[in-house]
Every structure is written in structure tokens, then in C-alpha cells.
Image 1: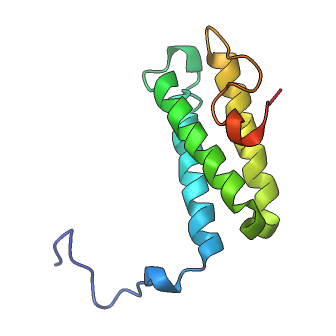
Image 2: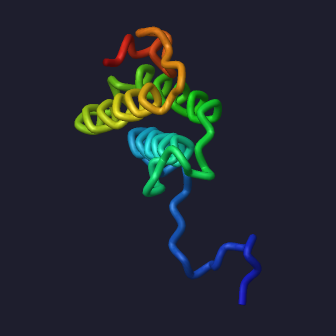
Length: 117
């Protein structure tokens, strides 16, 4: 039996150096999208009453995602479109969830992506 912090020598483990950059970037984007959705309460049947809803945290995660996507779009190839669509969906969901919506162009990540409508 192995300790939780020890790798099993029989398990194939990919070294981070062997993982293509597009995969690292895509996985980071998916993690940020998932976190943003959770922080908007979108995983709950009634997002307005979600105990996970935290718009301040959602703003931070969505802005980080926008920066990542904007700075790496040239490397994402066919992954760029779906990731951008996910980002825009989160930006729109944030605007809808906010009791005082930001001005166009001032929402989370919009300084990187431009205004989302």
C-alpha cells in the first residue's frame, strides 16, 4: 500500500515536460471555466440560492481565464473556439447574476476580450 503522497512505481506517469503546451493551456482553461461556473452557482438547480455563489471570486477566475485565453489563442488551434465560447458564456452569466451589472467593457475579463453582450 502506498502513501497518498507517493507515486506507485507501476503506474505510468507523464512527466510535465512531456505534456504538449496546448494540453497544459487547455487543461488550465477548463479548470478555470469549471471554477467560474461553480463560483457563479451554475452547478446548482437554483444558482441564485447556491451556497457556492461568490461573485467576487467568480470575477477573479473569469478575468484570469480571459487573460489566459487572450494571450494563448494563437497556440490553441481548434481548441480556441470552444474555449472562447465557454469564456463568453461565463462572462454573460456573471452579468446576469450581478445585482449591479458592470458597464459594457468593464465586466470580468472584458479588458482582455472586449465587451461581451
